[in-house]
Image (tube, rainbow, N blue to C red; front, side, top):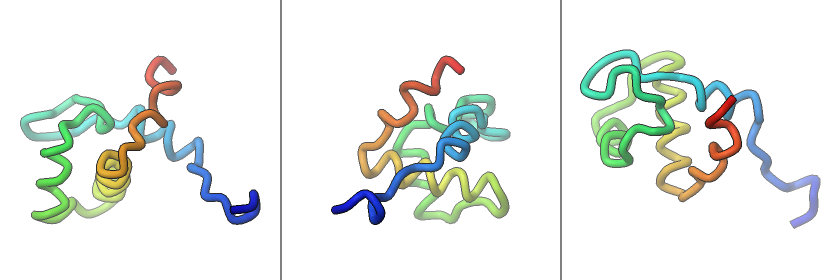
Length: 78
């Protein structure tokens, strides 16, 4: 794959995900990136919320099921 076709994560989106906290429920105030995978998978089966929270949870789901959590390591302390 050449560099023009390479898929690169948007740093601004990753930073927003790294800072966003769950606004409700059992995991209220936990960072979205720290939600248990089983909880994010449950949302994928039941339906993600509307709006930006749902979009972020979808991204977290894709990141977790594809083993890409390491992308957040450098962002945890920002």
